[in-house]
Image (cartoon, rainbow over all chains, first blue to last red; front, top):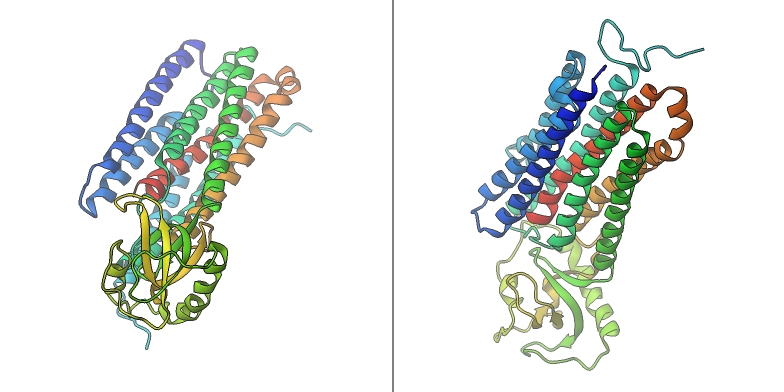
Length: 100
Length: 303
């Protein structure tokens, strides 16, 4: 990763802007919590904002935007298994197996 | 012997060793926290599908909000530290790394303050999941409104616990949830019917929509009385587990970054690019810790 000083200075500008964006999004997260949005849309909005913030951190702070293919492949597996874990819950609640 | 590819990237992958290593490690960490997030979803869906209240806004938002900004700020300073190293500005690197560690310390301090506040807070958990924050004042009698019992508060706190413990095994079958208990918990309830266990008076604090004042509750409706610790209810169990594990990660990350700050001098003199790579890898872990908190904050504090 041979980066020149000019490239780094440009990246630093991006980091500062991402920081400002994250601050604004955090404020929005808190503000949205005080508005009475009907369930389950309050969860949808809150989690969407969280996903946007997480994407900013991952793409810019963690340099994922310009990473190598091998890293993307590793993370594709991770993403798939993480989604599977979340959807297990939904599967269990729609199961027809009951006790007794 | 010199380990190859610590600085120079491999031709086939285009990556140096630690880059692949840290991303594989972070992938495993995603599964670790993902498992706990999945538990949160299970617990919350389970409660709500059985009509048991999931606590809303049980935590002070301000410390959580400040902690979020502190961690995001520390993410920026750690990446500035890396950029300084890449530009061979060692003094700036030390300043940014120090600020990062200061943010980590601030986060832990605020967390400790929050935990302490919860541990020293008494509350009453009802069978329908509702929490009444405050101390048990004393025993009431069936049909009474807000009568202060003759017992001292600590003694009264233990006597209701005995019938509640007997009631708890029966109450764990959450399908048999009577709708009536929700009414008894409201202040000013006049027609509290005589139940077998008697009633309990609670000095309730103002919380959310509930005003402060004395609340009369049937002993049969009480699931648990005690401080807000992990065993209080499922919400606090998952809250302390998630934030506790996260805090341990903050501590571990701070130790690694501290090592790079305090022992970085000799590494910098020997091979500055190698130190830059190490700081980048440590920074990646730090960003992950920030990322987890970005999800924890809305899930636990705001929803």
